[in-house]
Amino acid sequence: MATFGLVHGAYHGAWCWERLTPELEARGHRVLSVDLPCEDPLAGASEYAAAAIEAFADADDDLVLVGHSLGGLSIPLVAQARPVTRLVFLCALVPRPGRAHEDVAADEPDMTLPGPEGGACSGPDGATRRHPDAAARWFFADCPPDVAGWAASRLRGQFWRITQEVTPLERWPDVACSYVLGARDPVVNPTWSRRIAREVLGVEPLELDAGHSPFLSAPAALAEMLDPRP
Image 1 (cartoon, rainbow, N blue to C red):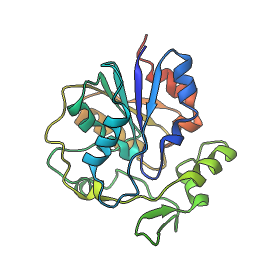
Image 2 (image 1 turned 120 degrees about the vertical axis):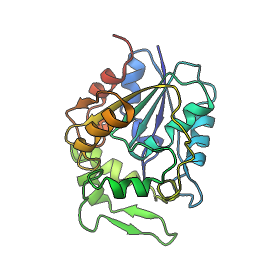
Image 3 (image 1 turned 60 degrees about the vertical axis):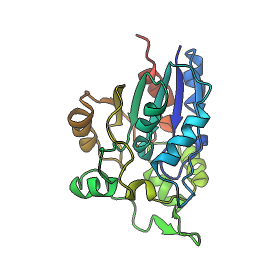
Image 4 (image 1 turned 90 degrees about the vertical axis):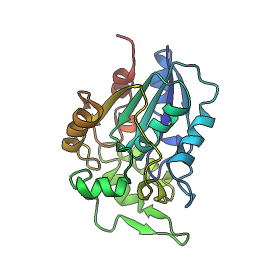
């Protein structure tokens, strides 16, 4: 049995793991999740990591961190602060010590794929928000329509200090890593994910026949892939 600490991506919340959690629990694992401070304009990777560290405080040393999409930028910081057995980057961005993510993205323009035109807007508070119809067609493209609509309606505002700042990650923690990608991901380019998994993490990526949100579209297959037991 393992304890999974699930860290969501941009715009999301702990709610996004509701279909994956029972699949992991049915396999005998414990599941913890966190709501990251994405609506706080002052929150960067350190604040995101602090929220996860608090949420996972009573986890044993068997903690497996799963970071989805933007969540990949903060999970290595959690591993620097407490015992973790594995980092799993799920359709995820990958930080580079000493660099801001926006600079990395500029050097790697194939990192993400273009979303629907007019899919995002700036709210009165300055946060970026996603139009539900566009989000359903992008983030949740391969989900059943009712699931895609439900998920799109739950999305929150997102501030971007975490991508603008130089990452506080000074060096990679000495923790095993995995990368799980969606072969039909329309958000984080699968071709980029394959390359970065090999070149940056030094691992062979694992692939699901899924889009950007396999925790909603293929939760049983994702749980099987995450299960550390043979």
